[in-house]
Image (cartoon, rainbow, N blue to C red; front, top):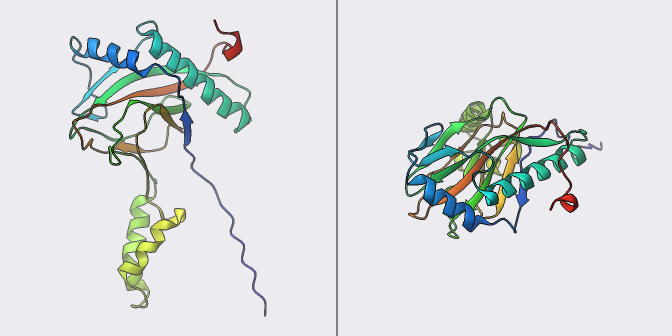
Length: 223
């Protein structure tokens, strides 16, 4: 008897990685250094660290970053999702974490897409990853931990560890910070940022997107 098995993906949760090599990060860092001295910032998801919303016109290099991010996410909506809309920045903020500081688990309600851009990240391998959490992580971890018992001893806990290599059983996904790179994702995607293990300042721009009121100017049309 012949048995044929075909796997079908039921649905997916995607994160897009965007590389922006020409952003003037040094000017944004200089802007941060100036305002951090006089502005205490605010507390949201940050545990320690410093966070502050940035308004258009405060820093030209930051404004350019925001345009490029809106342009990139518009491209995703138009060419991947096939939705004929342009995206604009709903709000954005600088978030600074040094040694031992992190951002707690959160989502981004009230917008149509979200993202982070790494202005400054250590070149060390471990730099406090952004961690996306499967909404079913409690059920998944319980299922994996109890599988040896339910299998009547045919498999053990060590054998079950291989399940984490299959995305169906992955409760988290980790991505390392990289300067000049952004990660953008649906706003309902729960995530946290792990502690920065270095004294090196991890400076990022957090971004929320909304539908634009008018079309974005094309790159070739901008002065």
